[in-house]
Length: 227
Image (tube, rainbow, N blue to C red; front, side, top):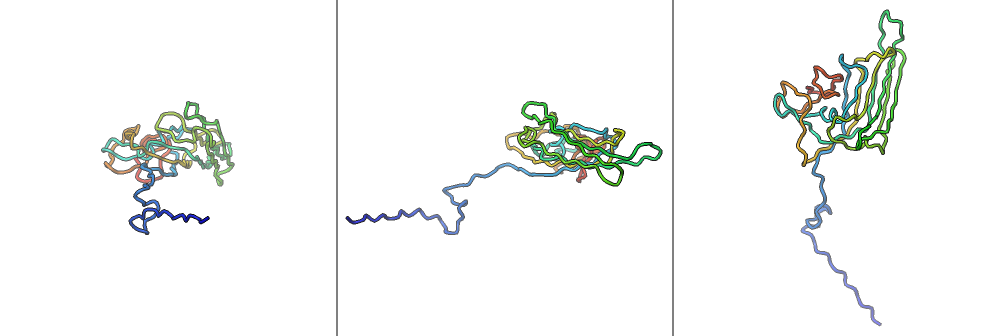
Protein backbone atom coordinates (compact mmCIF):
# COMPACT_ATOMS: atom_id res chain seq x y z
CA UNK A 1 0.00 0.00 0.00
CA UNK A 2 1.33 3.37 -0.95
CA UNK A 3 1.91 5.83 1.77
CA UNK A 4 -0.11 8.95 1.36
CA UNK A 5 2.21 11.89 1.51
CA UNK A 6 1.25 14.56 3.94
CA UNK A 7 1.93 17.99 2.67
CA UNK A 8 2.95 20.50 5.22
CA UNK A 9 0.53 23.37 5.46
CA UNK A 10 2.40 26.57 5.16
CA UNK A 11 1.67 29.16 7.76
CA UNK A 12 0.78 32.57 6.40
CA UNK A 13 3.90 34.60 6.11
CA UNK A 14 4.06 37.76 8.13
CA UNK A 15 5.09 40.98 6.48
CA UNK A 16 8.73 40.53 7.30
CA UNK A 17 10.86 37.65 8.50
CA UNK A 18 12.55 40.11 10.81
CA UNK A 19 9.38 40.84 12.80
CA UNK A 20 9.75 39.64 16.39
CA UNK A 21 7.19 37.25 17.87
CA UNK A 22 5.68 39.94 20.10
CA UNK A 23 5.33 42.23 17.09
CA UNK A 24 3.13 39.86 15.07
CA UNK A 25 0.07 41.95 14.16
CA UNK A 26 -2.17 38.89 14.53
CA UNK A 27 -1.04 38.13 18.07
CA UNK A 28 -0.87 41.42 19.93
CA UNK A 29 0.90 41.12 23.30
CA UNK A 30 -0.70 42.18 26.56
CA UNK A 31 0.62 45.43 27.97
CA UNK A 32 0.61 46.93 31.44
CA UNK A 33 -1.05 50.32 31.35
CA UNK A 34 -0.03 51.49 34.80
CA UNK A 35 3.06 52.75 36.54
CA UNK A 36 4.57 50.46 39.19
CA UNK A 37 7.85 51.20 40.92
CA UNK A 38 9.87 49.99 43.88
CA UNK A 39 11.33 52.74 46.06
CA UNK A 40 13.12 53.38 49.35
CA UNK A 41 11.96 56.39 51.35
CA UNK A 42 14.43 57.80 53.90
CA UNK A 43 13.45 59.99 56.83
CA UNK A 44 15.30 61.59 59.76
CA UNK A 45 13.49 62.28 63.04
CA UNK A 46 13.14 65.94 64.00
CA UNK A 47 12.69 67.92 67.22
CA UNK A 48 8.96 67.10 67.19
CA UNK A 49 9.65 63.35 67.33
CA UNK A 50 8.14 61.89 70.51
CA UNK A 51 9.82 58.48 70.43
CA UNK A 52 7.24 56.52 68.46
CA UNK A 53 4.86 57.03 65.57
CA UNK A 54 2.12 54.98 63.90
CA UNK A 55 2.57 55.28 60.13
CA UNK A 56 -0.54 54.90 57.95
CA UNK A 57 -0.87 53.90 54.31
CA UNK A 58 -2.07 57.43 53.63
CA UNK A 59 1.16 58.78 55.14
CA UNK A 60 3.25 56.66 52.77
CA UNK A 61 1.27 57.80 49.74
CA UNK A 62 1.53 61.43 50.91
CA UNK A 63 5.31 61.05 51.10
CA UNK A 64 5.72 61.51 47.32
CA UNK A 65 3.38 63.93 45.62
CA UNK A 66 2.91 66.39 42.78
CA UNK A 67 1.83 70.02 43.22
CA UNK A 68 -1.43 71.03 41.54
CA UNK A 69 -1.35 74.66 42.65
CA UNK A 70 0.71 76.69 45.11
CA UNK A 71 -1.36 75.30 48.00
CA UNK A 72 -2.77 71.97 46.79
CA UNK A 73 -1.03 68.70 46.01
CA UNK A 74 -1.96 65.20 44.88
CA UNK A 75 -0.55 61.75 45.58
CA UNK A 76 1.50 60.34 42.70
CA UNK A 77 0.27 56.79 43.31
CA UNK A 78 -2.94 55.07 44.38
CA UNK A 79 -1.60 51.96 46.13
CA UNK A 80 1.39 51.20 48.34
CA UNK A 81 2.95 47.98 49.60
CA UNK A 82 5.37 47.91 52.53
CA UNK A 83 8.29 45.59 51.87
CA UNK A 84 10.64 46.39 54.76
CA UNK A 85 11.29 48.97 57.47
CA UNK A 86 14.81 49.74 58.74
CA UNK A 87 15.63 52.00 61.70
CA UNK A 88 19.05 53.22 62.87
CA UNK A 89 19.73 55.41 65.89
CA UNK A 90 22.50 56.29 68.37
CA UNK A 91 22.60 57.07 72.07
CA UNK A 92 23.38 60.54 73.34
CA UNK A 93 25.99 61.33 75.99
CA UNK A 94 24.36 63.85 78.31
CA UNK A 95 26.79 65.51 80.77
CA UNK A 96 25.63 65.40 84.37
CA UNK A 97 23.04 62.69 83.75
CA UNK A 98 23.65 59.43 85.62
CA UNK A 99 22.67 57.13 82.78
CA UNK A 100 24.70 55.37 80.13
CA UNK A 101 24.12 56.59 76.58
CA UNK A 102 22.00 53.97 74.84
CA UNK A 103 19.49 53.61 72.06
CA UNK A 104 16.55 51.35 71.37
CA UNK A 105 14.74 51.09 68.06
CA UNK A 106 11.76 49.01 67.08
CA UNK A 107 9.23 48.20 64.38
CA UNK A 108 5.82 46.55 64.71
CA UNK A 109 3.18 45.49 62.19
CA UNK A 110 -0.04 45.53 64.27
CA UNK A 111 -2.62 45.72 61.45
CA UNK A 112 -5.91 45.29 63.32
CA UNK A 113 -8.15 46.40 60.45
CA UNK A 114 -9.91 43.88 58.20
CA UNK A 115 -8.24 43.62 54.79
CA UNK A 116 -5.03 45.05 56.23
CA UNK A 117 -4.30 42.58 59.04
CA UNK A 118 -0.72 42.37 60.21
CA UNK A 119 0.76 39.42 62.06
CA UNK A 120 1.62 41.35 65.20
CA UNK A 121 5.26 40.97 64.25
CA UNK A 122 7.52 43.11 66.43
CA UNK A 123 11.29 43.47 66.66
CA UNK A 124 13.62 45.72 68.66
CA UNK A 125 17.30 46.54 68.38
CA UNK A 126 19.47 48.05 71.11
CA UNK A 127 22.91 49.61 71.43
CA UNK A 128 24.95 50.69 74.42
CA UNK A 129 27.22 53.70 74.09
CA UNK A 130 27.32 56.44 71.50
CA UNK A 131 29.80 54.97 69.03
CA UNK A 132 27.65 52.13 67.64
CA UNK A 133 24.14 52.58 66.25
CA UNK A 134 21.12 50.57 67.32
CA UNK A 135 19.68 48.80 64.30
CA UNK A 136 16.53 46.92 63.37
CA UNK A 137 15.25 45.65 60.01
CA UNK A 138 11.80 44.07 59.78
CA UNK A 139 9.75 42.69 56.91
CA UNK A 140 6.02 42.03 57.19
CA UNK A 141 5.13 38.34 57.05
CA UNK A 142 4.68 37.21 53.47
CA UNK A 143 1.10 36.01 53.96
CA UNK A 144 0.03 38.96 56.11
CA UNK A 145 -2.39 41.36 54.45
CA UNK A 146 -0.21 44.30 55.46
CA UNK A 147 2.35 42.93 52.96
CA UNK A 148 -0.11 43.45 50.09
CA UNK A 149 -0.94 46.58 48.10
CA UNK A 150 -3.18 48.90 50.08
CA UNK A 151 -5.04 52.11 49.15
CA UNK A 152 -4.70 55.46 50.88
CA UNK A 153 -6.33 55.11 54.30
CA UNK A 154 -5.78 56.22 57.88
CA UNK A 155 -5.27 52.60 58.98
CA UNK A 156 -1.95 51.64 60.58
CA UNK A 157 0.72 50.22 58.29
CA UNK A 158 3.38 49.89 61.00
CA UNK A 159 4.69 51.47 64.19
CA UNK A 160 8.25 52.75 64.45
CA UNK A 161 10.20 53.60 67.63
CA UNK A 162 13.51 55.27 68.54
CA UNK A 163 14.25 56.14 72.19
CA UNK A 164 17.18 56.25 74.60
CA UNK A 165 17.63 54.40 77.91
CA UNK A 166 15.37 56.87 79.71
CA UNK A 167 12.68 56.47 77.01
CA UNK A 168 13.37 59.95 75.70
CA UNK A 169 12.94 60.53 71.96
CA UNK A 170 16.08 60.26 69.84
CA UNK A 171 16.31 63.08 67.33
CA UNK A 172 18.30 62.33 64.17
CA UNK A 173 17.29 58.67 63.93
CA UNK A 174 17.23 57.39 60.34
CA UNK A 175 14.17 55.50 59.11
CA UNK A 176 14.19 53.71 55.76
CA UNK A 177 10.87 52.46 54.39
CA UNK A 178 11.10 50.06 51.45
CA UNK A 179 7.88 50.26 49.45
CA UNK A 180 6.33 49.45 46.10
CA UNK A 181 3.99 51.99 44.52
CA UNK A 182 1.31 51.46 41.89
CA UNK A 183 -1.27 53.69 40.24
CA UNK A 184 -4.59 53.15 38.46
CA UNK A 185 -6.06 54.99 35.50
CA UNK A 186 -9.58 54.47 36.91
CA UNK A 187 -8.92 56.19 40.25
CA UNK A 188 -8.87 59.95 40.61
CA UNK A 189 -5.69 61.20 42.31
CA UNK A 190 -6.20 61.69 46.04
CA UNK A 191 -5.35 65.06 47.54
CA UNK A 192 -2.48 65.16 50.03
CA UNK A 193 -3.98 65.28 53.51
CA UNK A 194 -2.08 68.30 54.85
CA UNK A 195 -2.20 71.59 52.94
CA UNK A 196 1.07 73.04 51.72
CA UNK A 197 2.21 76.56 50.79
CA UNK A 198 4.56 77.98 48.18
CA UNK A 199 4.46 74.95 45.88
CA UNK A 200 5.41 75.16 42.21
CA UNK A 201 2.56 73.63 40.16
CA UNK A 202 3.67 70.48 38.35
CA UNK A 203 6.76 69.93 40.51
CA UNK A 204 7.18 66.63 42.36
CA UNK A 205 7.91 66.86 46.11
CA UNK A 206 8.70 64.59 49.05
CA UNK A 207 6.81 64.87 52.33
CA UNK A 208 7.37 63.79 55.92
CA UNK A 209 6.78 60.34 57.37
CA UNK A 210 3.57 61.56 59.04
CA UNK A 211 2.24 63.42 55.99
CA UNK A 212 2.86 66.82 57.57
CA UNK A 213 4.83 69.69 56.07
CA UNK A 214 8.57 69.97 56.59
CA UNK A 215 8.17 72.58 59.34
CA UNK A 216 5.96 70.31 61.47
CA UNK A 217 6.80 66.71 60.62
CA UNK A 218 8.15 64.23 63.18
CA UNK A 219 10.47 62.74 60.54
CA UNK A 220 11.56 64.76 57.53
CA UNK A 221 12.43 63.27 54.14
CA UNK A 222 16.10 63.38 53.20
CA UNK A 223 15.18 63.75 49.52
CA UNK A 224 14.76 67.02 47.62
CA UNK A 225 12.66 68.96 47.03
CA UNK A 226 10.72 68.65 50.27
CA UNK A 227 7.53 70.41 51.28
